[in-house]
Image (cartoon, rainbow, N blue to C red; front, side, top):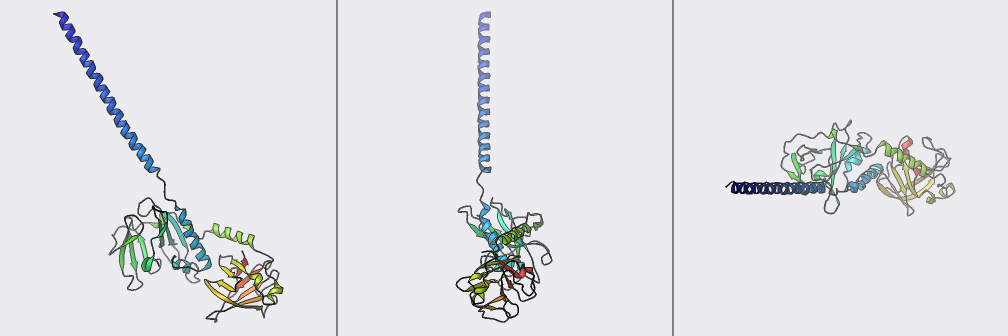
Length: 342
């Protein structure tokens, strides 16, 4: 009888041991499975975080285009002309800044341009917004058309904390009063609403703004201008005979404005192109030659005076050691002189 009980106890112990091993095996299997899922989720998260970001270098051309437009005081329908107008205004100047920020939270940083706070504007005033398509990498201007294409003066677009905009226009019936805008689903356009959401206004002063024309870029431009300036281009013997060939090229002032004289007889300056009329000796100062041009409204034409190296002009506010063009209707200043860059 004792022998039978011993065998029974041994059998039960074996069964208990087998059950324990099985439970341990199942626990390890469950743990490994859970670990595998967590690892898979972790890999997926890492893969998502390492997803290739949209290349914002495509905005470089937009920034460069604005810088050129401001420097030459000319623009076109693809830009907000108020940026150029205010940058070159003698009475109410205002400078422009830009920054990159994901306004709608879709993973693409927008390029935002705005007037910088100063005498004219108390707060940052948005003037233009661009985004980039995730599909083809093309730059898209979000602020175009009759209402959003002239932001910054009578038409304002205020960014709100809920990623929408409050808009107000006071430029006539087409603008209307207060309304709102929100991004469409793919973030590639702005959709107008009858009113804004009433959300709190975002603090744009905390954004990382950069000047469209920084002191560093101006300094670099000025150095480049001095390096490229030619000292032997203007030929007095040709100019006195009415030949302006030696003046053909691009001339630039210290504040970034340009004058272009082409070999086919065109004068480009102040954002306009005029046919060249003739070149003749200036009647007031010896050695200075005046390039006249055909203008539909000749009253108040800006004189274009070609000043060869070493020749003193009426004011000597420029660098007489270099060939230069003096272009001004008023008292000459350093910015009135243009030096050859091309």
